[in-house]
Length: 311
Image (tube, rainbow, N blue to C red; front, side, top):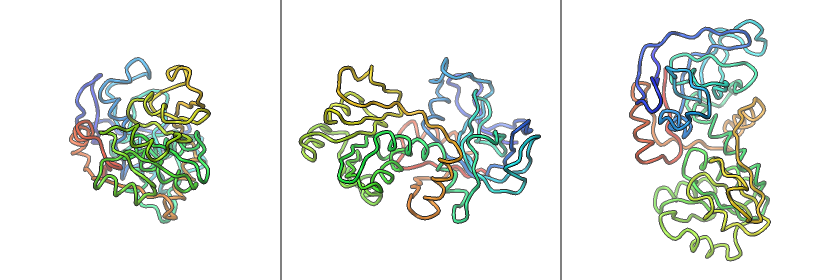
């Protein structure tokens, strides 16, 4: 099968012929139709996860997938060949990925049925970013009338977080450059946008003189973001920031570990299928174009998601 792989730490991603995987006990084989690029993938390809997670080279890149079950291993009871599914590759080590024509994943985690009304393209950009966004918003638990700052709001996780927080009645202040970026976030539910290239603190203080009730940290300097939260407020981060790093600030701090369990995936898929959660796709790449997608992501980031059409 054709797949996007990396030979060693920091090696450039490339498309190669790889052995087609076979499902083992409790595993499901999927013909991948769609996927997407995440910050995790960029860190993996760049060698930045060395020492943190076991790598089994050559590593096939990619976490998200949407596709069709083609084969099930012994002991699988919840899925059958021909079923449409989506999810996140969730295995202890890094080796098998979704940027290929087939992927094998465990039945028990990171896999869910594709509901009616959700197509492969939308499901392929939902998994990891959607799970992370929901976890960050749940961690700070905004309620109606509270003010929430989202730093890194234009990215794959951020644009989902804006929608999830706004749906709970929070007044969302989102970082975005003026123009198309800000326009998109207003469409997704942000009440205000602030330009991270300028004086972020001054812009936020003008909107919330006493500070915001909570903050979701997806990009930027964590201490600067934390300083804008009122004492006793909540702070969550997908970048490993914990209370020790933030010193003696009187905040409830939650580092986020996005776990793609079936319940969370089902919930996210239902929200998208019902048009209550909108994936924003900046560009779609073919499998042969994935190395260019990595270059584009690393050079300029992304507004919303970079989708990958595999089939």
